[in-house]
Image (cartoon, rainbow, N blue to C red):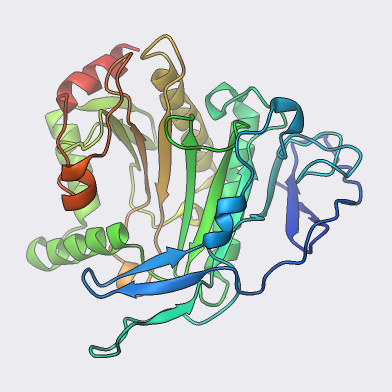
Length: 360
């Protein structure tokens, strides 16, 4: 993949065009009268009861909410007056979020000392939007193979860039698909976060992985993959370089984890052959998701990535795909047990979900 073409939006935000072979991006000036950006739009506040940071991003209350298709800000804007992408067409684009949860450069946030009282800090980091296609009605699972690979290459490019930025501790690429999940824009897109700290779930998984290495001498994730392969009951699909399975202790009604068959920390460590295979099997899984019921499945896609050193060295790149739909007509709501106690209750067995996805 050749490097992306850079552009600048009316308020100074970065825009990158990733293009398929033979295509040339043709952006036009962004002529929207956008207000100037707040240099510190968000704040981090430390929760003493959990030892976790909470992001306060009040300006996100004003973000665009379910506009009609003709006013979608992610569709191409050939006149430079209507869209976040001032161009007549595009393949894949990435741009800084106009309503970010995190923004600005700064030092990695440390845990405040005991007795420090109420502790707040600037919400430094970076939030980007990635549009998978100019087609407003499409989805990642519908993309042609070469186009899906371009999205994956864009993810890898942004991962490498953000990991090299001062103050970014963790890079998280993800997609929320479907109004049931809470998306406010229907155009096929995802987001990329550069956090200034390790997120709570990542920290918990790494603590488990470190303890596993100390006790057993191996990588927790690699050993889990080997155990799933030996059991076989929850395997959904397997290729030369990747394996997809429903985890033994799945929390969501539909949940699939996708692991490379060898340990890498993030997308930048995959070979070109592995990257190609990843795009193929990932798209295959999304296709299976959409064939479960008569309507497309709402889902969350989370790419777990790690740095190859320090506290994150025991990490193992993988994707977690999750849906809250527990039947054709029912949703799984994260009510008191899940939301207040973080104690998930599964409504279906992982083995039954895996069997159904295999059959699809």
